[in-house]
Image (cartoon, rainbow over all chains, first blue to last red; front, side, top):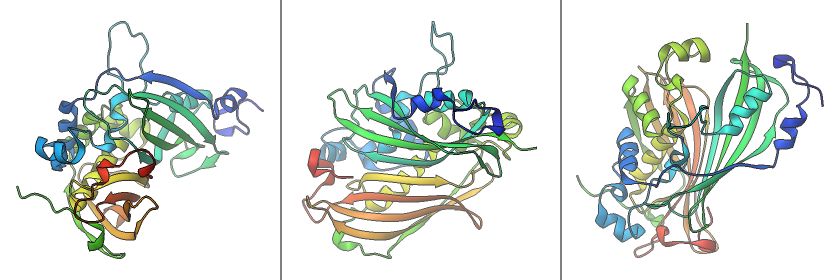
Length: 177
Length: 160
């Protein structure tokens, strides 16, 4: 493998190759799943689904309050600040590791697939880990030259059940002239 | 507010269109969604950063906010008994303050799996003017009839 050289990179660094398929950054969320954030999320998109607003409906259909499935990643996004933390925490660390290792200063997400399993319930504190699935050859888009990568994020509840898998496609790039 | 309709599988056929949903986007829309999804990255609240570092026209809607809008769009239609199994989207372009987002959808498939769960496959998109900014597909379970509830399915009975 040759060393990465910014936009002129040819092959992947050995370090990046070693990450592919590896389970990394296993963490438990900083806080419990709670209704305040559910309400904030629903309000941000004006989601009036009674499952999230009407306890009678929640009890009837889902045996109590649950969180909207699409909030699955919210429960792991680190606080903007925390005491004794010296480095900025990133919610999808493998993505930022790739930017650094491949010397690609900018990045966006292009594709997102989420498979939902057990509902996420109030009071749960979820566990997650990340797996790098693939990194593309160098590509040039209207944004610049870089590489696409696919990262899976697995989510599990305290009962050891999968609540979902999220798969991100990112594009790390160096802006064109 | 009237209780939303609860779609059942027998009332749906391929080609059915979902009602369109239009949303005017302003900076608050973008920031509200970023904060609600705990996304503190500056391109979702700092216009100078978005323009200078990302090369975009303005701050733009983030990925989890996009997903939350699609979820709302789907369950506005299915009602609360609709249970999302899978959602996939490709963001082809960003959505900025000043845009009007319009969500569109159609039923691409209807069926029942080996466990008796009723599934609807949806082809969805988000447009701004003539431009499609996000293409999306979703798989959502709905009751096969009165008395069925996809939310009660667990383990092998839930195959998203």
